Length: 85
Image (cartoon, rainbow, N blue to C red; front, top):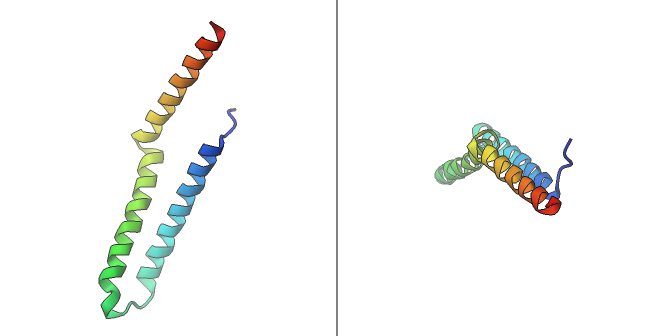
């Protein structure tokens, strides 16, 4: 099993933080009373945070993660052949 790098740990930590923030803001906007003058700002903030959460999900479960993994495999294979040859 491959050991996780600092970069991978940071990616997962940041992704988890974004998803927690998304959940918190969604619950806060849905359950708390928002003053009439701040409704538009709250809706914009909710949209931005949901966009961040969507980007995290699309990266980890979409084609970006697979593409990143393939690039890493190609890089690893290239380095293996240059060090052995």
